[in-house]
Image (tube, rainbow, N blue to C red; front, side, top):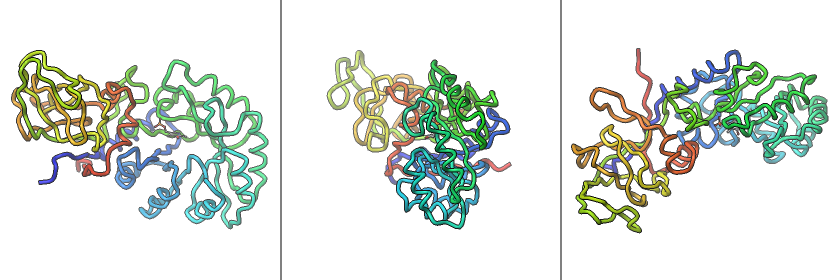
Length: 373
Ligand SMILES: *Cc1c(COP(=O)(O)O)cnc(C)c1O
């Protein structure tokens, strides 16, 4: 038998969450953001679950090629545009749409020989200060692009820095609108946080929304809201089994560095999952874990291949018991159980995005097909 750890990818959850994005942004088209190998879920796998999308947005031409090889004929958007002039040939060949965020990318386009003019998304830096033209330079870039025979249609795009946070989007929205009011072209502004929190407003929603993490069941504004609040379902489950059980006396310690000390006699379980599987090494004592669908806690430092849990709340647990690190747990007393990845990430001082993307290559992945009606 192989080591008992595995990841499950739930296609019905991807379908459901895509439906949630549509419901939050009615009439807008949806770019499903599948960068970073579909946020760690596997590009081919998430493609199956997200086929009903209007387009896919990602970063790498190689990933775009893989989507074309899967026979995806719809739009694909390169969110950072091209990295060198030669990339434009592949854009022409594969019919990729691409972001244009700097003068250099316009220069490359102006020198590009193509029979098929490109659809481009011109990016404004409205305050994120990552990629994009400053507002005062935007109109000039738009005019330059619009005049190029290599360019078909120019759409307008920007990115919010605080859509999940108290500062909100108003300051950036105002800048974007002030500098684009009389420019033609479709608009795209919203990431997941903006889709969930702000997209009821048509000017925010625009023509295309760009949800990423919410498609995978991650919540951008956790812990203010959780997955149940937004009606999102986990698309990834990381599960394993107990491979050992120990009985501790009061005063005994657990694992490297003896980080955890038992206050009283206790039973602990050894789980076949460690940081080499993508579980965060910095997870503190108390990080939630499900054993047999019941909540318990991590104790002691996570090691490369194992971590340790308190079996106090699960006296029936034994070697072979199912352990859920995040995602959908087993049925327990007739109920489906679940441990949100956001909760684990929050306990570890990070965000669900990072845990999803860090799923290690050595973990076998199984795809769960949607239930047939
Ligand atoms: C990653 C990304 C998104 C999606 O962000 P989420 O927070 O995962 O929804 C949207 N737009 C751009 C430009 C991105 O880079």
